[in-house]
Image 1 (cartoon, rainbow, N blue to C red):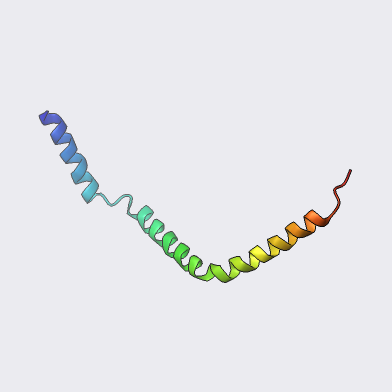
Image 2 (tube, rainbow, N blue to C red):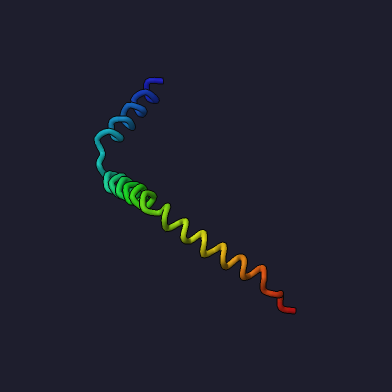
Length: 67
């Protein structure tokens, strides 16, 4: 049991003091900030895209199918 506790403590200390994965976390934070900014800008754009796709759908439904 003492060996498992030692390994767990060593793993926890390594997790706290290693900075090898720090860049990955920074990129993830940057990507999430960009996603939030894009989400703030997207509602007007998404409405326009929805209108365009609705028009395309209506045109596709009104066009007779090719045999």
